[in-house]
Length: 357
Picture 1 (cartoon, rainbow, N blue to C red):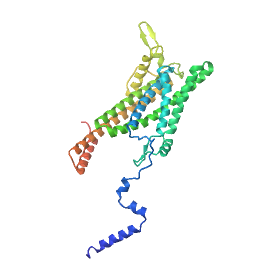
Picture 2: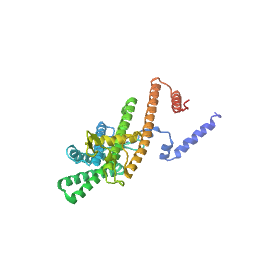
Picture 3: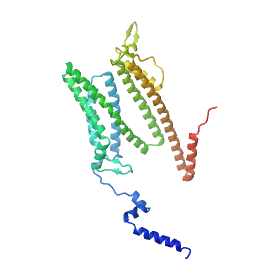
Picture 4: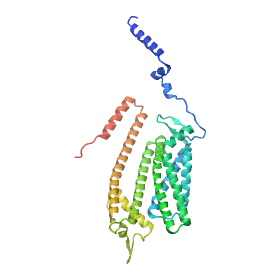
């Protein structure tokens, strides 16, 4: 007993010191995992939308489709100066309405705090939305409605000098709608979260590759529209433009590039844009300073874009291999210590580099 006396005194002192502490200090210093895991539930509203619900998932995917269609059509309409009629007229009125409703839904959709806790109180949801995406959304939606309204007024009333001014304002409103690309980042994050939670490793890798391929085609489409817009703009300092030399011969007659059909115009510009991204050669060359600046910037973007594609694919393949190894270790009931050693060894072998002989 004499041998255990110091230990007993130490325990008594520890207990007495704990009793002397305030209640909040005792709770914070004690190892009470119950208070860390089981937090008090926050106030929830019946009108709040759970971001993990099937409704929100389907709505987010539908929003992604609408946004991709709109971001594909708008650059083409701006570059080729297409008159809004038919399907484009329907799209011009339905998309602002859709994104206006989307803002209302954003005021009802819950979010996660940094600690991983779901917030479903409408007041806190509104405060969070006003601090984050609301300024961008209201700017884009107002630009949509201004653009549609001005174009409707220009088509309905307008000839002469007033009509030309109205047309310029309409183009400025259309350019403002390009800001919707920022909204794609939010939707891509939602779809990526869904893929991480509900898709297997193989489907997840296929999803990433498909998203990367879609990004490549969309970037080439944007560069195509920019190159065509520069070619038809009156900004030449040499009096010459690439569009003056991109025609073709049809029998004994020469057909100018701008006199050809829209399909030939688009595919020719698309070929140039694809060559810049792939760093390949093409028979279309810049003819003035603005076109050369655009060509240089496109080559730099293509170089960075190509390296990004390679690194992204490599990272996706490495993640897929590591997930497959972890899956095999779990299926074989391998212990945590041995599994960690195997994982570290696999990472070292994947990162090992040697010179080619």
